[in-house]
Image (cartoon, rainbow over all chains, first blue to last red; front, side, top):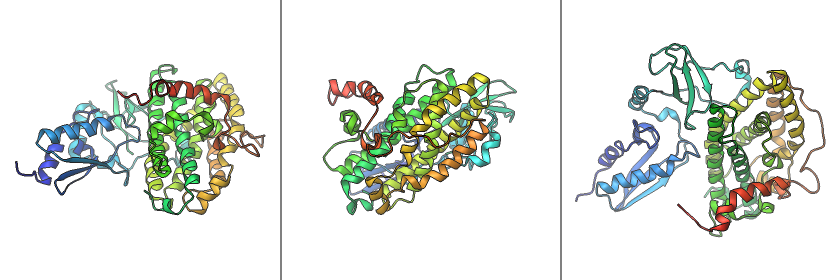
Length: 171
Length: 263
């Protein structure tokens, strides 16, 4: 078969679901940093979300399976650490899919910065930002824990519809 | 490979990378011991996720240590095949977990140091070190916010939680000095522009700790004798407490019994 174009390969990757949050794809998540042909080899550059994310090796296997399934024979996966992944790279479409799935999408610009002085007054358990409930839209919510079901999420609770939900943390 | 690796004393550089990597590994392992044992489910999950961050960071550091060493080892070889005396983590991080408050106090005292270290390393002359630090710093910012939050809540909590946090602080404080003790390896790294001198991070660390302890209604300890500082050195020089051996016995068992086992 004729060699696939770079655009085609991006299209195929946009159909590979994230193993942890299968409603969004790897391209929605913003972790595919490059696709290119180097001679007869397709090189896909991937950046990890969190250093210890256990999905990383699964993601590499899924990319390989998806591209081999489309007839790509020579494939190399490269890891790129810099610039470090940020939730700002989650696409608009990805954010909508997260919300529809019941996960509040990241609120850009609210990542922890470790500057405690500005936050110390709020360290009494109250949340430092308003996260809207993905089910009922209420902003009457509270943080339960900084870390949710995966490192990339925090646990919240809606005080109106009373449902717990995940918030995709800003990083 | 990073830019500075060609010119620096490799033995010292490997040693230093192991200090950073082993710190993440041993604390990550300690924190993972809480999995299934925490006071509430949310804390259990939070601790496990934090352990995961640390183990992930450890693999980035030790992978690089193995590359710089150039003897064909991997991060796994370094984690699973070295004996206690080859580990380079400070003594604070191998302290037993104690109660939940004790674990959180250890975490806070280290997080407050860790973030300052990583922030300085983002400007490292070695590109790879700067890249790993930039990645890790974002995760550690969340660790620090969480541990500081809980130190405040437990310190300024009930009489019981306050007493436990005060006891944890008293027990752990004599292990903080080692974090800032410079030795020949540190000086070589500072000279090469790879890493800051640990002592240069002290004032900023103290400022953070002071702020949080005040909010937690805990008295800042004064000058006390410090473990691992002085002629014999401590964990950073491979002189460990007996606790590390127990950690390694559990962590390394599988690879010792079945070398190169995979699944």
